[in-house]
Image 1 (cartoon, helix red, strand yellow):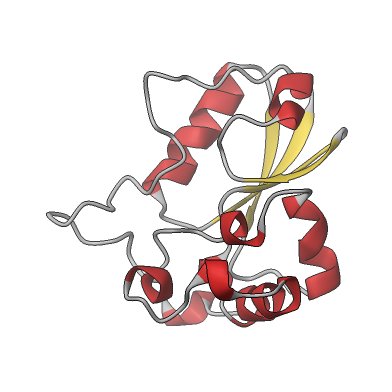
Image 2 (cartoon, rainbow, N blue to C red):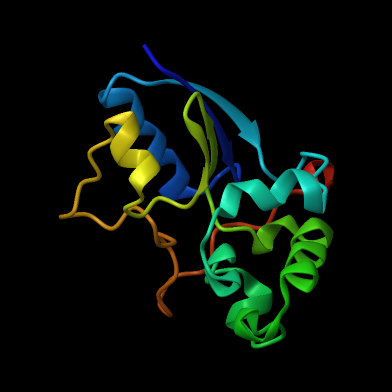
Length: 146
């Protein structure tokens, strides 16, 4: 059984569904709170591989949805600094595997090498509460703030 470290936002419905899919496919998960980790630019950068900077961000993050941050306008250093300061900006989940690191739950060669079959009929990458009729996932409680 392959062990994965899965960095989630506690209470995130999509992260919970992603974990369920991985467990059904035989993975053992060590789940960690993305918001409580002591991130640095050096530690965070390898999760994004060769993806463009704009794809490093969680498009459902309040600062992005409200237009306070434009990920496509940021340099690599600016993006990392913003995400270290506000981990809600980080595309989730972050995953550590025996074969490497990755960010997000979208098709990726690393997911393929791990043997993960992403269910294409269901969008597990987007925020489950990102439509206008529903509130965003609950904000972290004060005791969960990094």
